[in-house]
Image 1: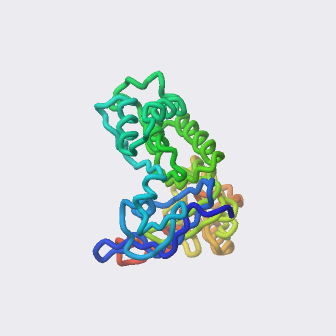
Image 2: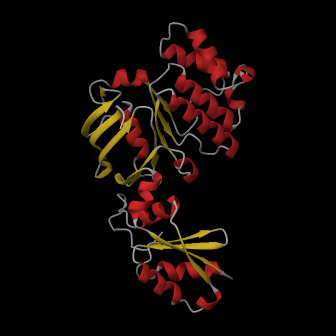
Image 3: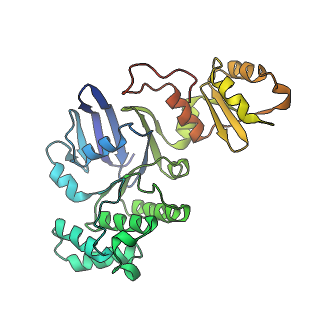
Length: 316
């Protein structure tokens, strides 16, 4: 691995009686794009905020860009760009005015030039006088990314940046992210989209504060040892509930006109499939697991830190 841009150990955050980030280790090499995946409430946003100094950890240590996350958070903020889940700029200011405001916050010595460069880089010149509140989701995303880049950060922390954005805008955004990585900028990006996850160099999957898997897409799928069958046939949706209750079945998920049934014990899953009353009307075939299969199955055994009872095996 190249020099580490993020290197933290044992990171934890506790609110009241609940540990929302639990002993997290995270390492990301310089110039790498790391996808940060997990369900809502899993601790992604809290972790990101601790990395950039907006929250103080209750336990753990480490560095971002070689700077201590506890004692040098102010310096980290000046070298990192943080894009929040919700649009955080001013609706009643124009694109240029918003960028100029951010430039003032960072006390940029050549602020006008920095704003011009940000406008050009994200293709915002023609709209620079438009009020931010009148922009579509995709253009707001571009403006938010431009604001993150105006001070030329070495690290980008992006918290679900493409939520609610159309597919073309998402593709353009990811092309930009890969271009930034080629320049040596490190990116930690949280997402719920599996197609976006597959565009990352590596992934970290966190659920209820604990990291459950990490590595490349291929590594995570291989290490899961998950076995998957695709079931097609008339009224295939009617088999979902019975299969969820079957021993050995970790997850049952509808994909269009098919149902993916996954488990670690192949014989047990096949018994469940062939035990269905109308199995003769079904076409069952083995399939290679995909990333979504793996993550849904991981969730089936994860312990919800807001629930005192463990998740039942086989539920998805």
